[in-house]
Structures are given as structure tokens and as C-alpha cells.
Length: 219
Image (cartoon, rainbow, N blue to C red; front, side, top):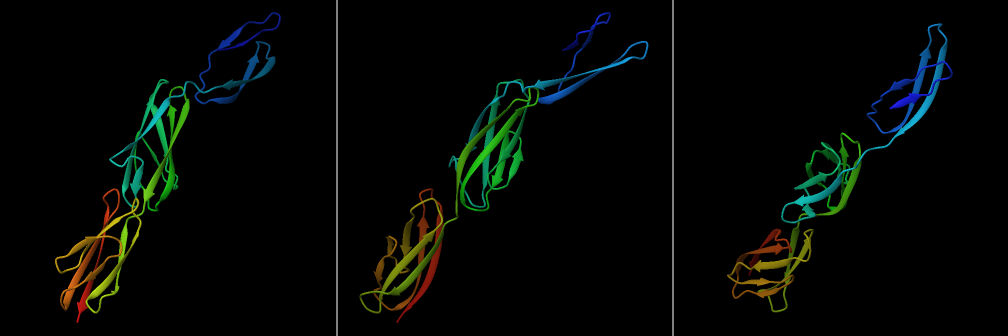
């Protein structure tokens, strides 16, 4: 409510104003009497935002606040307090954005990001922001090598290079002759000459796998 105090012989003027945006607002009262005398009075009013909601961020899925390059990450924000309803504005730290209480985003580059959501009470105009870090893993890849081993022409020294994934990977080998072994760089001696298809599979701590294959012809 705004009230202007009149001068001698004047009358009170009351007005009720509803501000839809917080901040500084200039009020101009323009009054004209019956003799066409004009009076102007200015007032500045600061309107503060109302009660801000509380916000809780949740990552949906089995891996919590981790994800994979090129795969969708599902997130949810829960707001309470204020009057509601609420408006949600998401930022994913890679230039992406979204709206709504639930958000789905695909990170195309692995790395560490900070997800934030700003929640605005559309009635009180109070705002709150919640943030949470998220780690996006590169997809695992496996490369293998096969070099002459220490025990003659039927001996092969294998090697593996694993990139990406969520951590140290376990590499399992199948040498094409019925023998298998686990390790990053095994040596295998074949019993006889022939052509062998060697398969290797890496498995990271979350169960993600990558595979590689090489064909060997042993004289």
C-alpha cells in the first residue's frame, strides 16, 4: 500500500500496488485539482523476493553421480517451501541446459563437470540454486600386441593397452587353442604350429568391456 500525506486543505490518496518483479521500482504520483493545478511526487520502492524454496538434487540410475560419454544421464530436482509452483533451470557445465523438474543430458566429452539447477518460486519469486559434481567416463578401448616370446617360434609375448573406462581394467585372454588366462601381458607357448585366433577382453570396475582380436599363423 502506498499513501501520500496531503498538504493543508488536501485529501488522502491511497493506492494498492502489486509488483510482479523484485528490485527497485519508481512510483510517480501525478495529481491535478479542479483548478488544473498539477502536483508530482516521486518515490522509490525496493521490492525484495519472497521465500526461496529448498532444493535437493538426485542422480537417477545405478551409478549415481557418474556417467558415460555419449550416454544419457538422468537427473531430478525436488523443491519444497515457498508457495509454488516452481520453475527449474538446469546447467550441465558443458554449455548444455534444460528445464523442468527432471532432466536428461548427454555429455559428449569425458571429464568432470558441475551440474546446477536454479529453482524459482513463481509466486514469491524467491530462488535457490543447488549444485553437484559429476564424472563422465570415456568409453573403454583395448589394443593388443603379439611379439615373439622367449621360448622359440611357438612362444608369443602378448601385451595390452586399455584406455578409458572407470578405473583399472582386468584383461582376459583366449589364445585360440583352448587355453585362457587373465593378466595385462601374458606369454603363451603353443604346442604345435597352426593358425590361432586370439581374443582379449578388458573389464573395468563398473563391468564395462572392450575387446580386441589378432590372428596368428605359427609355422
